[in-house]
View 1 (spheres, rainbow, N blue to C red):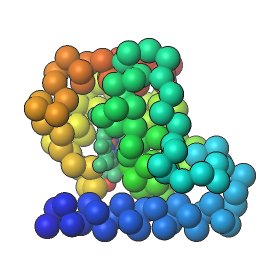
View 2 (view 1 turned 60 degrees about the horizontal axis):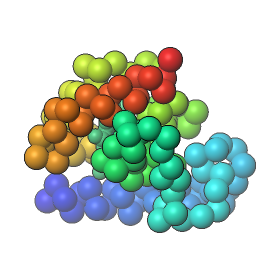
View 3 (view 1 turned 180 degrees about the vertical axis):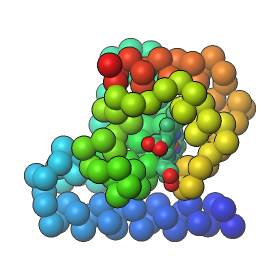
Length: 128
Ligand code: HEC
């Protein structure tokens, strides 16, 4: 059930993203590219960032479901986690380990504590 809901939300998020793109193509960098989510920016300049891209990027980079949902709630300018200045290690851990709203919980089998520490380092560092 949960998976079906997540799938449905993802589909909605994608169509909302498409609509926003059509309406205001240059309004925000997160929406600006005419490309599809399939060729989302997956570049990384550090191992910590590469891990973020691998484990979180499909939802938390441009046009990802997390970015789309957070844009609606917090505003497009702070929807990308890597641009946030208010993320703490505690908040990141709670979201990842327990999940919340449309974010699934991610267990240690998928992202180990060591990997989560690296991802947290990247997010806290990229948000000075
Ligand atoms: C399947 C998609 C998905 C994946 C994978 C995912 N997230 Fe999320 N994340 C979301 C969604 C959707 C939200 C918004 C949750 C809500 O509905 O409130 C979110 C919210 C968050 C928030 C809270 C931001 C805020 O302002 O409240 C943090 C922090 C976060 N995610 C971190 C991560 C990290 C770190 C990873 C990788 C280990 C990750 N997420 C992987 C979908 C995802």
